[in-house]
Length: 210
Image (cartoon, rainbow, N blue to C red):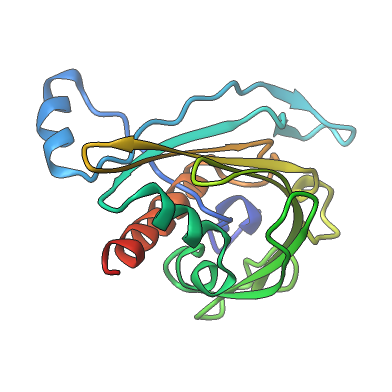
């Protein structure tokens, strides 16, 4: 997250991440040393906007997986409990505040993520990223789909994002698969993946401790 130039390209966003491509010879050792959070798959095109500036089209889709040593029912509850959301659904260095959270299909949500240290990199205010959304699909103990959008006056940060979290039984625990589609062009995909890694690590720690 850069402090100069277009700081928005470096700002963290809901759940966000960084995968460095390793050489084939180091892939095996890397997989042993990192937690089971995996790849990003995406389509990305570059275009010129009305002002002649290049930007990324909104077809970036993050795909990330993590094994959690807890049953699906426990993980699912943490996905829909606003108190749990405030603890895990936030990158390191930020604080989460849940303003509204109606956990039913068609229900709305509104959440703010505020930087702990002044950065001026917020999307809604200098210090805060606020997003609102709605739940479009809830399958008990299996899937949560929500559509979110930043509260911002910046056109490069606008647009609906679809977040899908799917749960499956795996090795006595749960495999979580999250996708984040429709990332605005002013949001860094690598920062987005970093934030997701941080958030899912907190989710795992929260439910595994219960």
